[in-house]
Amino acid sequence: MITYLIDAAGALTGPVTFPDIPGFGPQLPGNAVQVPEVLTLTEPGTTWALLDGEVRQVRDLRGTVFRKADGASQSWQQLGELPQALTTQPWPGEHFRWINEQWTLDESALRATQSAQALQHRDDLLRNAQLRIAPLQYAEKLGTATPLELTLLLGWMRYSVDLNRIEQQEQFPDIIDWPAPPDPTGL
Figure 1: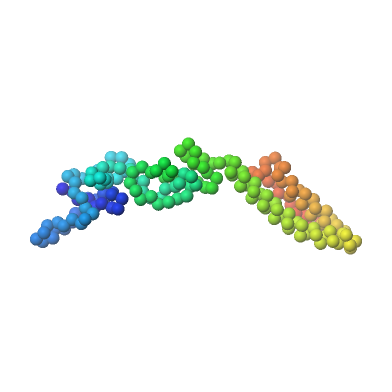
Figure 2: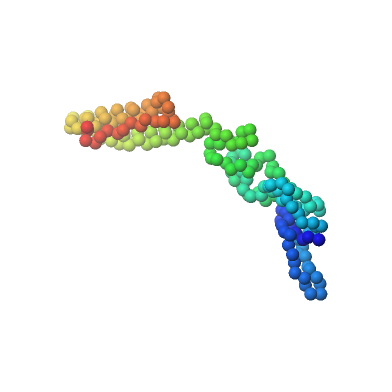
């Protein structure tokens, strides 16, 4: 008889040999089973297991698997097929959804994220522009603005208008032609 060890999932590993103990012979641990012949795997991705008292070749998908609903990874330690909600295919990223038994890029979700990121960046640039515009407007209102300050004021105002129009660009949000801020020398 050939001896194999059984792991927590029921998978057999071996064959193993245990030394004879004088006066007793070989002593088998509680997680050992004896079979009449050496077990040879015939299908890739399988293992031999003791299930319901019977030695059978079963699928072995133990390891990291991914939830089809959200792509989250988890550890799988059972033998046999995966539940319908899990896959062994790694999740490629946040804009991928499980469609037709594969991860598929969700173009609308990607575009929505790109658009939101571009608009957030635009708003940050507009806030910065407003910080530059305010003192120049004060100087203009007070009648103390220098020619350079008046030129800068117009430059920052044009820049702000151009920033506010990025959504109107033909390839927004894939390609954005970001306007350049005015040159501080007024050139």
